[in-house]
Every structure is written in C-alpha cells, then in structure tokens.
Length: 326
Image 1 (tube, rainbow, N blue to C red):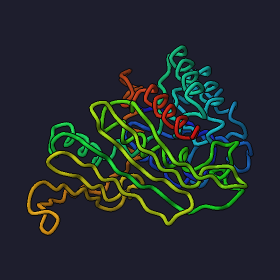
Image 2 (cartoon, helix red, strand yellow; image 1 turned 180 degrees about the vertical axis):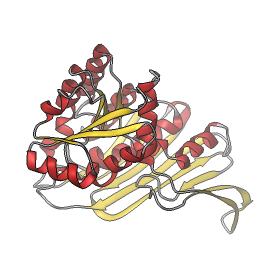
Image 3 (cartoon, rainbow, N blue to C red; image 1 turned 90 degrees about the vertical axis):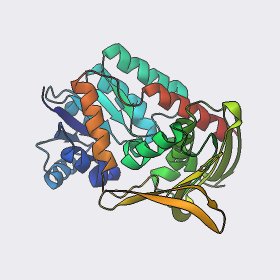
C-alpha cells in the first residue's frame, strides 16, 4: 500500500472547510469516500471536493473495502459509537477532539481499536505545526531555563442555542470545545499530569453549558498552568510560557493560518520590561491539518505508533471531568 485511502464520516463544517481538503493535499493520503445521513448531502459534498464515492449512511462507508482509515468530525457524543464501529470494520481512526464524552468512554474506544489492531488518534492538529514542534524543543532543551508557568487564553463568541457547541447533550461548552487545547498544551509542555486542579466555571442558565471557565493546574515540581476559555467573548487566542531565565509567546497557537507565516517570540535577558532581549522565530506557511494526516498515514503505512497515543486523550478528559465537576 503506497497511500492511505481515507473515508470521511460526516459532512460537518470543519471537515468540509479545513480537514478533508488538507487530507487531500497531504503526503501519502487519498480521500476516496465521504458519507452523510443524507445521500444527497453526501453527493453534494463529494462533488464539491472531488471525492469519488458518496454514501448515504456511515455503515455503507465502513463496508467499503477500499477505505483504510476514517476521519470522524461528528459531534462529541457520537465519537465513541462510530470509532468503535469503524474499528470493528477494520478501519484506522482519526477522531476529532475531545476524543469522547468521558475518560471512561475514551478508554473503551482505545481498547476497541487495540483489539481490532487498528490505529486511533485524537485530532489535536496544533501539536504538529512546526511552530509548536520548535516551541516544545526549546522548552525541553532549557532555552528559557526551568519551566515554571504557562498561561493561555482561547475564546470566540457563539450564543446560537441550535449550535452543537451550545448543546449539553452533544458535549458542548467552552471547556470541551476549546479549553481542551489549553489543558492539552499544558500537559504536553510539562510532560506530566497535573497533581491538583482548581477551577471556576460559569454556565449559561438556560443552555447548561459552561460559557466562561478558568482553571489552574499544578504539576509535579511546582509548575503551574492557568487558563481561561470562553464561548461568549471576543475571538482571541494566545499562549505565554515562562521559565526561570526566559519566556516564550506564541502569537497564534491554535487556529494557525495555513497560508501565512507564523511567529513565536522568545525573550531571555536584556533589560525587561523596558528593553527585553526578544528574538522572533518566523515559520513559513504550513497546514497543520495536512501534517497531521501525513503523520497518521505514515504510522499506518509503516506500522509505527501514532505521534500521540490514545492514552493522552484519556488523560486530557480526566482533567476536563475534574474541571466540569466544579
């Protein structure tokens, strides 16, 4: 097999606008089928994106022997069902984040994929962008001394009650949708799980989902991460990383544009705050979704581990659960 043949389960917006076209451009990847609960919608999506086959149900796609792997951008509450069914059909799975509605559910998905001998990965695309790969390398190599604290903010405005991100039953809310990034990057940078989690959560009185949430995570050795996420605030995102001898600021940490340069600022020394010694790392345009697909394809085609194991998704959900229990 020279390329990984993908099927897309759902015509969800993120898949149509970003991920599926990126998979089509990725190395060693080919999108051969797309499915929807509506045959007409699937056909329209296939025509729009130039996909050879369209199916009017997800089981039909899973029965296609020419599909090696599936990408699942379904609502959060449907991730487990279709990941487990895909595994049973012998398909490798790249599933949108968060992987499941709970850590227990994510464990079940991981076990099902392991038993079926297929790969499973959570689609945290940002981790694979060159700007983040370099940032993690710099932190690990001590470019800012010993890591002390991470601060992040992620927000956008959405008050549409019909939107799945505002529906409790679909796994909506700020923490599940975007706070998961702040948790994930903190665990990645500290290379550990938090030993203590404190949070303040504000919920919409009618919708029940959290709309503004802040948390502090304490890590082994005393390191701390703090973040705020909101789906009722102006769109904004930023990450600040502080060490004993310097700091790093990531200008666009999550929704990184595929067609523009991105920048990371490293400050170490100088005369802060008036004249800090800051240098700018500039990264050429890169599509994090294409990189994600290429890395997943390589893992399948060469039978090597996926870049981030499914256990990482389980651990991330455990922190999410702790916060939402507040």
